Image (cartoon, rainbow, N blue to C red; front, top):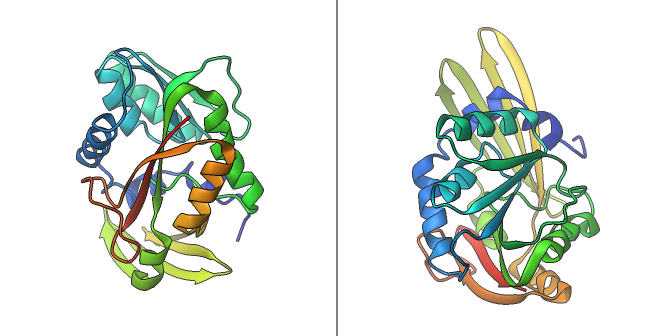
Length: 245
């Protein structure tokens, strides 16, 4: 397993194919829940931290917020830029590793969605992402972290799945080892075989809460999914935390 697997995987067209079910309708639900539970001014500055192909940033830009969107993948950033251009939306897209991203701007809201946390090998590096969010927020600003619920995942892990997308056979193998959930993705298309990997640290809710509070955040609200359900340790698929500086 490459320690920085995300650099290769997120830069491929195959990544978009595998996760194409993450659509705009999903993103609309995410933004509805967030904006319904934070208090930010009209035209607020928002940072999408690890924006991917820009689904959430574009929806927020349509609502006349001032968006900065950062991602490490050149491919995903280019797709996001094209989508924004198609709608004449002004979004400041930045190609950067979030750990190295620096700006003089301060934001009213920072979002980190679709499990864009826990990728790094050390807890220190992972927690540095939370610290970065705290540093870049205005006083009383909000940070939203969307992570899988590790306890639910342990009990409901699907070890193998297969599907055919656009003529490609996609086999996914999942396992939990050393407190990380790993996934091997094998794609066969036109006789060609490609293999990719994912590895994410499985933080418990208590671990994340302690890290967030130690940084200085207050836990404002917690949900178990993007429909706004109450978080339950055993049955909630997601851990969505709205934190306040």
